[in-house]
Amino acid sequence: MGQRKGSGRLVETVASGVAELIPDSDRAAAFSLMLDGAPQSYVDLDDPLHLEFEYIRRMAAAIDLIAPPGERLRALHLGGGALTLPRYIAATRPGSPQRVVEIDGPLVEMIRRELPLSPKANVRVRVGDARAALEGMRDGGYDVVVLDVFAGARTPAHLASVEFIHEVARVLDPAGWLVANVADGPPLRYARAQVATIRAALPSACLVADAAVLRGRRFGNLVVLAGRTPPPVAELTRRAAGDWFPGRVETDLDRFAGGTSPVTDSAAVASPTPPAGLFSNRK
Image 1 (cartoon, rainbow, N blue to C red):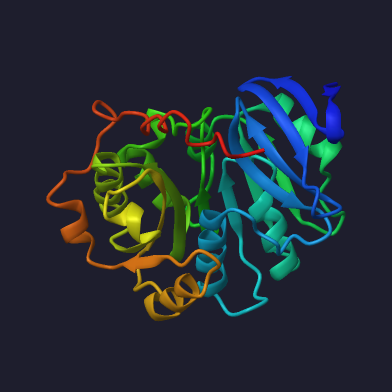
Image 2: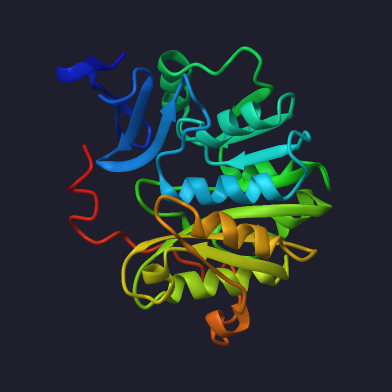
């Protein structure tokens, strides 16, 4: 069990570091999850449709648009955190069968205890490595795979290769979609390589991000939507433009990747470390 600090903050050591659950003073049942000082998740137990992080809103918008409203989706989440998007899908697409793979067992237990899922949510959580878990899954079993895995503030190298993405593509239905969070900063070498890597297996793709991030001016999150059929660019563009923090949709990914080759296991690296002080304004 963790230690309760001032203002109801819970601090607990988990496998991946020191986890903190920090109540939101403006929302009665909302909490931020921090791991070693880096923001990982935000959950409002009373309102799972309230998504605080802009990149999560962009991922949710993509999930909203890949199937008619309310239609059930078979969803696989690689990376769990506080289960923000599983809660969102359970609320917007009731009855959707969802599976979550999260490597940090003590974190999973902390979230189950402190931020329990709705009893109506059809969500199963498995403790394990995302890539190892994929290897035992059947072909074409999911309509959407959500990739948002971080060890601390970095995505591990073994989840950044074309061999891994081919495994993701294998478990997707032919009409299915990958929604991936890629974190990078100037000059976007990692993001360009990840776009080339993802498109080697799932060629129809687009990017959604803040314009300054897309232009390589600051560190941030880029959301990749990739599949085998054209993405819903027009609708995604409208959603991104209408957000609290407007984003831009990039469709010319040949230009964005700039001739970068897909990354193989032998050359894969973890995502860049965020710059010092990036999270200093988070409470």
